[in-house]
Image (cartoon, rainbow, N blue to C red; front, side, top):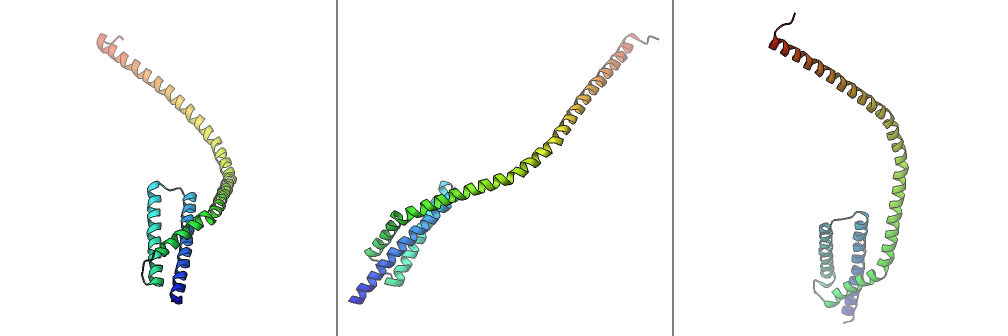
Amino acid sequence: MNQVVNSQTLLFLTCIEIGIIMGMFYDLIRIFRKIIPHPNWFIQVEDTLYWVSGALIGFAILYMHNYGKIRFFVFLGMLLGGVFYLCTFSIIFMKFATWLIDLMKQIIDYILHILGIPIKWIIHLIKIPLKAFQRLLLRLNTYRRRQTKKLSRKIYYQKSDVRSQLKYGKTK
C-alpha cells in the first residue's frame, strides 16, 4: 500500500512539474509574439497547437507513470503547477524578457541609425549631380519646346502660303 501512495505522490509531483513546464513554454510563445507580431488567426493556431501538444504530453506522462489510468489529481497537479508558475515566476520572467526585448530593439535601432548615416551621405552626394542633370534636362526640354513651336509656325505659314497660292493663283 505504501508503494502505491509513493508512486501516486510521485505522479502528482510530476504533473506539477509538467504544469510548470507548460507555463514556461507558453511564456516562450508569448515572448515570440512580442518579438514578431502575429495576426489574430495565427495566434489562435499557435494556441491550438500548444494545447494539443500539452494534452498529448499529459496523456503520455499518464500512460508512462500510471498505465493510462486517468485520475483527478493528475489534472489538478498540472493545473496547480501552471497556476503556480504563472502567478510567480512568469511575472518576473515576462518583465525581464520584455525589458530585454525593448533593450535589443533600442540597440538595433541605434545600430541601424549609425549604419544609415553613410547611406544618407551617399544619397546626398548622388543627389547633387542628379539635380544638375535634372536642370540640364529641363533646359533641353525648354529648348526643344521652343524649336518645336518655331518649326510648327514655319510649317503653318508654309501651308497657308501654299493654300493662298492655290486659291488665288501664282503671283510672280
